[in-house]
Amino acid sequence: MDATKTFNSAEFVTPLSISRSLLSTSISTLLFFALSFAVLYFVAHAVYQSFFSPLAALPGPWYSAISDFWLTTHVVRFQQCRIVQALFDKYGPVVRVGPNKVAFCNATTMRSVYCVHKFDKSSYYKSLLTNNNDHAMTTLPHAEHAVRRKAYSSHYIPSNLALFQTDLQDLCLKLVDTLGRTFGSTPVDCLDLFRHLMVDIIGTTVFGRLPGSLDNWAKNIQDPLATAVYDFPKRGVMRSAVPTWAWNLVCLIPNNRLRQVCDSDRIMAQFVAGRLYEMRTNLQAGPVGGGTDTEKLPLLQRMLLHRVFATNECMPDKDIISEGMGHLVAGVDTSSTTLSYLLWELSRRADIAKRLQAELDEAMPDRAVIPDAVALTKLPYLNAFIKEGLRLYGAAPSLLERVVSSTSPSGLDDSFDLMGYAVPPGTIVSTQAWSMHRDASVFPSPETFLPERWLAVDGVDGEDERLAMMNQHMVPFGVGSRLCGGHALAQLVMRMVIAVVARNLNITADVTQTNERSMEMRDAFVLFPAAKECKLIFNARKN
Image (cartoon, rainbow, N blue to C red):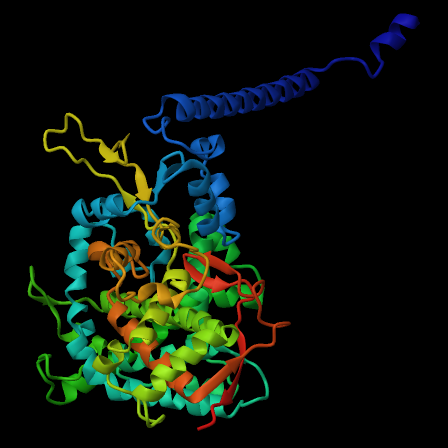
């Protein structure tokens, strides 16, 4: 009886239960081995990167040598420039910032990397694709970029920009008139205002059409194009920080603000494509000039007429659209940010504002007549003021990544000498304007806004050498053949805007709204203030 009870108990083991037990054991064993392998791989990787990698001898924190994760955490917090600067302060002018990444801060090495060897860009720039297609900024090989650059380089030479001078002056005067409606009342978010101004300027010079963005701002109407340009750099940072499948999931999140960021590329593409097809129709309907130097042609029309030298074929539409979008992004938020910081300095530095206004009062006896481009370049304090703004508040302060290629024709020793360290091909090397512009040995009191540093002192020996050294370290628009194509337009616009605003208006700020904390710099490849706004108060100057 007892034996029967034992035989029929729940403890009886069936073949099915044995199978389940074995399966469970197999899964547990597989998970254990997989986890063990992952741990061993990570440890082996860390040991190799720390002690046996060709970059092991470079200074830097141990955690940056084994993973890019540490630097990525600062990228997504928009603080990469500051953390890289902190590494330079601690470890010196060359530092390992990732398993395969080295940052440096040295003018001679900068010229070697970007001007002499002309290393290709890294894959990071692919996160800045427009319309899912390359443009000049995202074209990685140097040789291919040189071909693309020919399509737009002639547009930005000073003699051609002079043809648009009246249009630019009219927009700058319109800006002052728009600000006149706010006198002494509501603070103006200059970051937003200048973004709308720059959309109109780029619209006029690049696309041959005034989008009316500044008018929309004056009427308090949201301008979708200005918003898209503002969102695009953040889209690029987010896109570069996560894999493609994760980015696709992010774009599905039902959040209106996030969707605006994700859709910024599409909105700009629709504008540029629409203008392209309209311009082509107009060109086909009537006679058109041949694009000589004396004709005032918007860049889009130049690209329509441009023929690639190697094939004698026109540029594909997708390349024209992407290039146009690239110039829209590069030209708008960069200039609007630097201009906002410049006006903020005027609002809190009465000594600088007084000296600048004195120079402009003499150069602009009629406050409604802006001097021409050549005359503006001859105003010493205006140009010193803008140059100091580009030093501290240049809108592209981030790492400019390049990939080391073989430097030896024989291939026997193809490492690149980076300040005494042998760096093998495939290594990503970079410098950043943020650090080049804050080298205390070149710029004493580097965090102080001091336009006078750019003015030669009469009777003092070594002034020419001092100014030359500072200029060698100035790279607000990049360096070498990948220099920003529109830098001449950007500087022309800055001179005009600062001249007409400072000549006509006094600027103040409510320090409870706009202060050191709200204007603390963040970087998403391009610069922006922590508060994402720059609220200032404008009042008319008395005669």
